[in-house]
Amino acid sequence: MPRLDLGDWTLRTVDSGYLWLDGGAMFGSVPRPLWSRLNPPDERNRIRLAMRCALLEGHGRRVLVDVGLGGKPDAKFRDIFRVEDEPSLEHSLADLGLAPGDITDVILTHLHFDHAGGSTRREGGRLVPSLPNARWYVQRRNWENAHAPNPRERASYLPENFEPLADAGVLEFWDGPQHPWPGLELFTAEGHTRGQQLVRVEGGGRVVYYVADLIPTASHVRVPYVMGYDVAALESMAEKQALLARAVAEGAWILLEHDPETALARPAADGRDFAWAERVVATSPGL
Image (cartoon, rainbow, N blue to C red):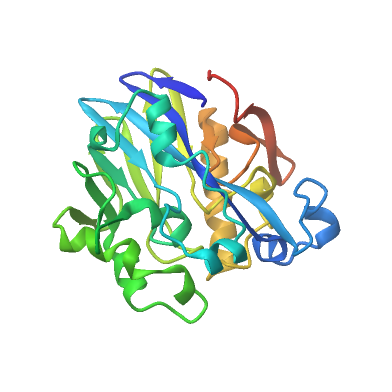
């Protein structure tokens, strides 16, 4: 799992399994001959996607960003999305010498099942927070969106993934951009789903962005490559353009949540678009 030192913060990527989603939906209007060259689909047109979380350690905290799918889905769900449970979030944390109870805070970029499903687990006949000592943070707008989803997103917002957090009194809402701890900035990107929040960490002369579904895979560095899942494709393009331009100016790294092979990448301008100047593979020890 790659590691990046950022002054008082240490960032590590933390794997939480894989799932397979429809390649056409992942690339929207981009023709299959283009996206399939680097993202080979299976016989059901699905491509393999990581669920890569970020662990930030510093300032007396262990902050996890997103938690993957978790272990609750039934057999039908697992077949539709070709779920690969391993490495699970718990096993990845254990590889770092950590237990679920060691996490102090969890930032959920949004409440879609592949980002927030691991928030809860079954204990007897009830659902409880999967990280028992953590405070959880989500944008209020995304919480409201999850409770009144549009028809396109209804299947992605599953109450069992987030209602138990509120019931347990461990969920906090943020309204817009935040600076919760030194060197850590939260800002919103609304094109994929309303109230998605992204993370920027700065320290030691380095910057890294956790961009969730704004740039889900390395192939999505091209501005027109936006997902068919996005509720507002033009907003996604404008948000991506702005973020990549800022990251290029800062010489920043981008942490890719869903790319199965590339964990981190540094963007560069490529004419009026963007490309990758440098990549860190998922099996690299770090930078």
